[in-house]
Image (cartoon, rainbow, N blue to C red; front, side, top):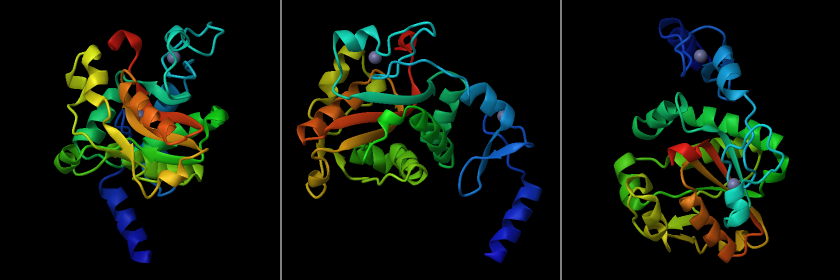
Length: 251
Ligand SMILES: [Zn+2]
Ligand SMILES: [Zn+2]
């Protein structure tokens, strides 16, 4: 332990931790319980404390003067999930953070995503679930990437909220094409029957409120399919937790 403290001190002295958004090396916040400093106070104020009004169901941005809590799309055709909690839009500078996290193994960012999701979830207390699980990756994608980015966020969020997580609750049974490579009309077909639940954990779903975690929600097709699956096995309520939400004009 003592050695670790000395090693951390030397590492900080030689390579001071810098803000993941602006590169600033001073006034960093202690954002995680493990002491990783990831964000400066200015970037937190500029990018993470801005209130954003979102649809309570799908997390698409709503005009700030909008009185309704649910967007027109969800009123017209309700998705299978009941709520979505999102931190930010999938726009700069957050999109670059996601790219670093997902494709360049910057796994320490998972703690930042989870900490900011925890804050949003507590503000929106009715979304707090009984059990958390990540959107699973297909086996091929998992082998290529070496990790499931959603699971990395789920592990931290579980610890921060004190809510148990079951990494294998959802299972992907069909290797699907990346949703981002397909036009919107083909996305539902690509994912049809793509998910099931692990037989060992099916009994934990009945009558419970399940939280499903993903890094980005684009059209919502994937999270709708996971909600279909969880509701099929008796989930009382399904809430999504995503770091970034693609705004309507970028879909
Ligand atoms: Zn900064
Ligand atoms: Zn909506």
